[in-house]
Image (cartoon, rainbow over the protein chains, first blue to last red):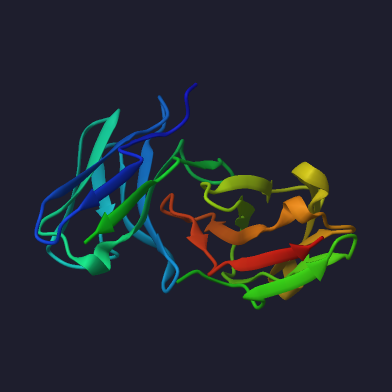
Length: 114
Length: 114
């Protein structure tokens, strides 16, 4: 399996622009997670889905952030409009079931908002 | 609610020194415990995990962790660190009555001096 796939790997945009990050989970995994990592705040869970349904979005910073999972093999995280403080590495992760099953992380998207 | 605490935020060691990173969690039921490692510029990868049986768990690269239920702890150890162990280490917990979400600690940055 190719693992969790994220695109793009790097994104540089200007303040006010819309940014869309993409994630393809590992086939068969029914949980998908979006995280944000910064030096100041560390690793933060933004939102997660189970069977394509958002379960907990309490970590989404504000209305500028939205996430969708239209099917089991694809999810997007959108920021509109983007701001410089959104600059971070965004990780997608997926997992099959609960309990001791391992959660696998994607390579991340490094977002820079100028 | 489950929470995970990593007491050491930044650890600096010389090569060949022994390592112990603390992890405590707050959850009274059955738990599954994980240690993840994030090498510089990379994504989080599973180091080891515990879900049942022998409380001393062996992981990759010579790491091990001991689950002590009475202390709600899952400390990570390595007898002799190498420069290549320089990374950030995250402890994570998933309770039995969980929602599929891993609760991560804030991470410990390990710097190994050659």
